[in-house]
Image (cartoon, rainbow over all chains, first blue to last red; front, side, top):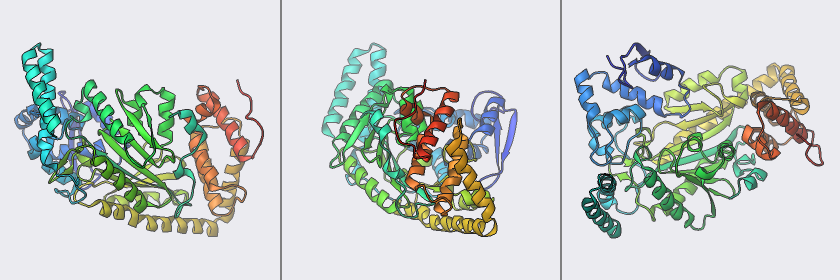
Length: 166
Length: 357
């Protein structure tokens, strides 16, 4: 069995008893030490998230987990493995493309699945176009790095069009 | 803004006024916000971060009628960054991270807006004493003003989208900082923690590593950010505070009644050490100041005032001491400088500051 946080074999099997029902964590020595010495600086920060994620992923087989880990966001390029490794998402679109994994996680953390508070007063209709900008800028940078300047200039025009229309 | 100007003033939230300020130090609310058209910080390139910083800084400095000063955190020396952390104007993570980032601060130090922290924007409002409703109204107004100038990452179902799913929804953290020395002495603090955790409130110590809080300061905050309105979250934290205040007052009454001599002795010794020590660590200072602060609130010490004590908690920390003394000091020199600063402040010595080096 692999460590939940990296590629090394899991040699430590920790049963976490605090916070609701017991959960099993499988970690390599390094990450086990990190987990056990982690001081809870952020009240509901990464340890809470790690616990909830671990709890959720325990049911899956190794192949399922490996396949899931390779999934990447088409907008920002982050893989699911990177997300669960660092506990931070890469862009707003991740909430949509990893929805199947994130929804149960969010329900586990908050006990709720829908926002009921404040909303921006301006209609967020163009949010998708804004998200599209993240992808276009990334692709433009990649095009420049790959010296595909024709593609880069096309992308630049597309970006300008969205920026000026919003 | 000159950090040195800040070193001569002290923040509004330290003034030790406001409701229940003998036990409640401060009320703080923060909102996590991200722009819709940029990746979150973990996937942002150096260029993205620079654009984010420029865009947000411009919009923030246009805010009316707020008068905000901008500090480019990336250009600050390590000591100045630590100073802002001790002042609670930026987070430790913000101080220690890299790349384009900054903070806008109002002159009363009630409002701070951190750019490129864990999220693109972290808005924070801090008031003295138990004053959550006013803090919410103030931060909500700032958020409204900013929202008219930028497009936030927002999802119809999930609300405000944040880099960490633990903040999604309202993106709001409501915190109250409490001074609970009597609950610590009577060993009831653990019990309190457990009951707060059951209602999904988080407790952590101020400056402390792990669960041992330095100076008996504890911060209570909401853990859940989704599925409840901002007003409900303010109420959730606000409603539990009077109960905790009541426990702390009862524990103080108990100590006064059952072991008056012990308590008076403890407070007087703490005061004595702080007024006479020649070298003293930060930990010992916090510990003793905590006893003295309780002693003042219980009328056991008559010639000290709470705002002065609140100030000492902050000004005896490493970066503040070094800013005040005007030179970088190692631990041993800091302990000497700290003792000197405490003697000067508590013995009400007048005249110029003592020579050193």
